[in-house]
Amino acid sequence: MRIAIVSTPFVATPPRDYGGTELIAFELTEGLVARGHDVTLFATGDSQTSASLRALYERPQWPPDPVIDLDHVSWALHQVAQEGYDLVHVHSACALALARLRPGLPIVYTLHHPHEPTLSTFYRHMPDVQYVAISAYQRSREPELARCRVIHHGLDPARYTWTDRPHNYACFVGRLAAVKGAHIAIDVAAAAGVPIQVAGPIHPPDRSYVNHDLEHRLALPHARYLGPVDMAAKVPLLRDARVLLAPITWDEPFGLILIEAMLSGCPVVAFPRGSVPELVEPGVTGLVVETPEAMAAAIAPGGPVDRLSRRQCRLHAVQRFSRSRFVTEHECLYTGLLAEQGQDEPTPVAAA
Image 1 (cartoon, helix red, strand yellow):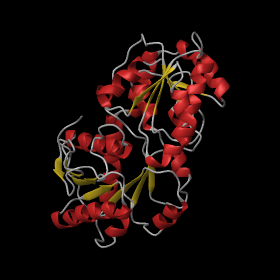
Image 2: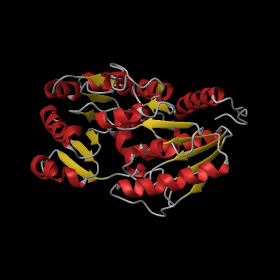
Image 3: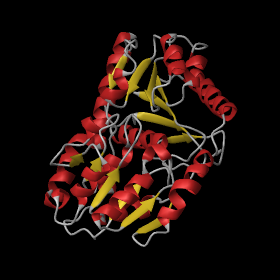
Image 4: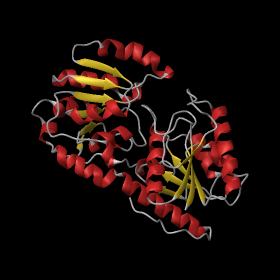
């Protein structure tokens, strides 16, 4: 197949540190190229890929701006329309409106965001698009989308390492926002008597939360703030952590850091919000708990977390959340979409 993948203009693909959408666009692109497909990635000019790379913006345009998004996506779709791609997989909602100007072009769109009623209404006006939900929970919030398939994210396991001899610390990795619960994680670690390493970026809308709820906690003796972490720092951080804490207070549609931890053999202890119950396998890849008190009891030295097998955590994560599975499910989706359109689909020439 000749496939166009349109990432974002806001973060490089793959991201240097923060950027879940761009990481998924990268994993999908690389997996499809490895299967022998002809793939073009529309992203920033500093992106790294084995596919053909096209860029309107040479550097990431942060913070996100809808005008820049429109500029990037319209430019990409103009090239796609002129060059005879079999289909285009987009990661921005504005692409769906622009695709109206090119009827007949098969469009796949991944829903990366939490439920937003305005976008749900918008999607209902685009019934010909093939939607991809990233969790069953997210799919349940869009019941009126007839053409929507659930495909859990997948990552390349080779990029993550594991050990059965972790260091004596818990970790929290994620955007420092109230809904992510870094303040709860620090309190839980204190209650359990374990040190905690906290990593993640601070975005401007979250500055007030950081000032009022996090700064004094990060100054406590048991807490250490690492700042934003790139892949080179994140891999050993997760590998050596006893546990990843995810005390989220919102309905997260997926949570990539959860599967990154599991692929590192690091069990996850999380609150049961959003997609968590379908991602964390209790007793295998972690534990799902209801309260901070239960989380502290789970991670106490010699407690339930220490009785989990890190090897089994890693193996289970590879089975469920590998890039190979992720790409295979997308290939099946693409093939079915092209069959509906009456197009022939070339046989892939290689297997990953």
